[in-house]
Image (cartoon, rainbow, N blue to C red; front, side):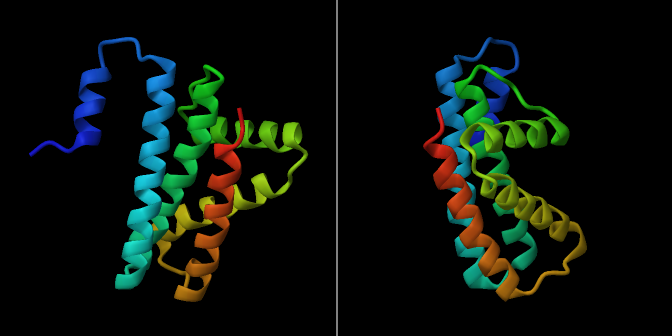
Length: 136
């Protein structure tokens, strides 16, 4: 069985994507990963929670970029765009929260964060995503 996400990816390989479709796709995936992270937290699967939160944050950043007809494909481009948004909105928390998501991405490989740290990070990632959804 092919997942919806993978099917969308396959269908998009050889065609120009409508920017609004891409925005909606990134938003939906970000929301999905955030919801999955919350469920995995209940199960105590901190490593998977970490990666889902990283994905939710990164996709929310890509959502804003897609609204502006930009495509971010590397970690560096994500960071550059986050810095730009932070300056534009005069909101240093955008960088701080994205830094937390990057720590979560590292935790996926290192498994060093405890449950309390992950729970606090979840709150921050939710704030980041909420702020990013408001950015045009």
